Length: 436
Image (cartoon, rainbow, N blue to C red; front, side, top):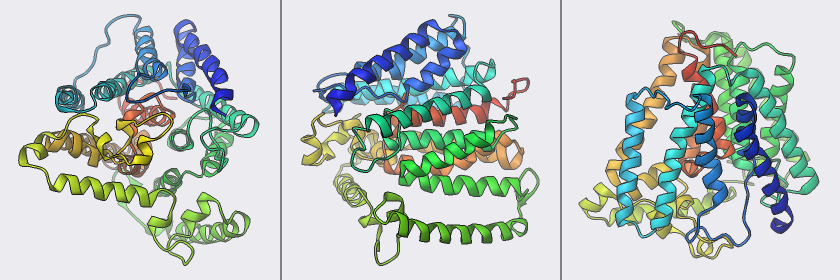
């Protein structure tokens, strides 16, 4: 299947890349967002011995070009807040720790990923502030991505999700689901008026369910809860938490959830979604019985075992950027595309302490704490609706950090979606910025 889809994805990727370079800035950004939905998987690619040109172009080169186009080829004026300084300190430390890493090339890739996140953030942030990115463009990108997903899933057939037929664009289902969830957060927490708003919300909801990604489905539940709390006035500036107004609504949700669970049990008993809904029953008695959970829990146990035997110096400095590849199973090492040390541990906080030691973990926790504090302060203390979009996605972000390796995908659909919301929530706090 890969040999059949590779020429198509390759051509589509280069068409979108040319759009980023040559089209007007607004449409160039549209093409850049869509390019995140086209993963070019090269036949015969070996992750530990070569560099994926598509990842390099998509994750760093294209956003850099667009950044200079947005700023009219002038060096962007970056406000070096504490969070930016911590991020760059992490980049520097990750670069230095390659020295004692057994995976030098993968370590360089990881540094490029971290730099890519910084450049992508600047692109989105400047785009919001200068009116290049707004509600119209978000909705246009959403529907274009959905159409790509319909074409890929139901006409071509997704080579990565062939067995489960998960709804996705030319990328894996998990990052596509996160992108849809991010678009939904934007649509729910803003004052944008359009006849396409309601259909777009429905498309996001249906899309997330069809992807059957468990992390996104859990995140969807938290997103809806936060939205209802905000909508009912039980969560916001000066209100604290007032549960009385939403008790009837919560009761309705419980009834709807139980009905939905019963329908799924009858209509799709073998689906990934039904497997999640049955957690705690006789059919699915524990988390280990859900999908890849058992393998990941075994990996976490192996990682903790390695950490417990380390010296104080190793605990402080870690074993080097991308050294998590040593924890891979033989199955991962025998994969067709080879071992990818940057996507092995499936837990970014555990990976941080393993590869970068307590120094790296401290910086990672500082960044995570700042994100949670800023979203809480903006939403609860200042009553800013865009900040609620970030707050509503915090559970999803935490789930991604604890069950995957999102840091290795700044140009992925998930990364672009999350950055869209993070910069939206923060940019809207700047006076004079045009509303979507």
